[in-house]
Amino acid sequence: MTEAPPAVARGRFKGFSPEALAAIQTRTITGSWELRKLQKLMTELSHFDEVNDAAIKKAKTRMIVCIVAAVISFFVAFFIMGFTESWWAFLLPVGVTATAVYFGMTHSRLKKADLINDFRLCLQPGLRDVAQDLDPAKKIRVRMDLAGPVESKQKSKQNVPPGRFIKVTETIFQDPWCEVRLPLVDGSTALLEFDVEWTKIERQRRNGRGKVKSKTKWRKKCSASATLLPPAPASWNEATLRARLDPRKEKAQLLEKDGVTGARLERHWLFKGADDPPPEAPPAREVVGMLLRLYAAMGRGGEAAK
Image (cartoon, rainbow, N blue to C red):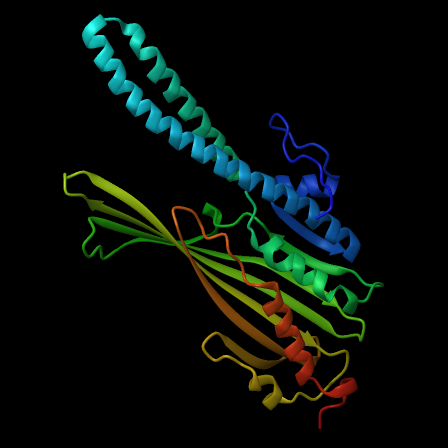
């Protein structure tokens, strides 16, 4: 990765281009872009996201350490007070608790600026792989929502049968976060679409001492579709299209769009995580491979369908 400016300084973003600053603040990218400018923007956002992710982990670790230290220091303070009867013994636990609150607030603030990892783990390297196949005279049309599973994307929230737990709450977020329209050198158009269904499962159980404990698990179901539209009516070899299809994870279809018959491949991935949403994303090589399989099934030279 090329050298990029520092992401955050005293709560303010510095050193970014105006386009990157706007994308960081809104967590969106829209409009028509030249490939070079889009790649530059995504490089800046990737750097910001990596730095922000590291800061989130550091703040969380420090918050946990301070909470543990606060609990221990309160016990020590009570012990000391039993001998000295001095309230000064509580200055340390109060200070450590205040520090834990500070790191907790920092963690929350950084999480609100977090970007979905998929754009830098999947889309950015995918665009780099197909760069030579793009028409340099035309722009790439982009719609990206990088905010991840936020409240505005909540599809449903309900209590489900708890089984051996006291209470189980399931929250589902629907996140069609990306649509990219790529003009190709042969006149064809490739359309990439990414959708994530986030499932947050919060469980409450009672331990052996009667205390209620909570645990959160996440499921991230990713869907990526690649659509290839020829520049003119063309024949499609459906046998070739379906020959390398994995029916457990993929489906293929022909469709009418923009006045021509195109082909579409869709694939699914499932990731799981605890406490926080899974950071994994679909591998870029598999998404690019979907486009290559569509090319292999398209009639040579845009032959007219018979």
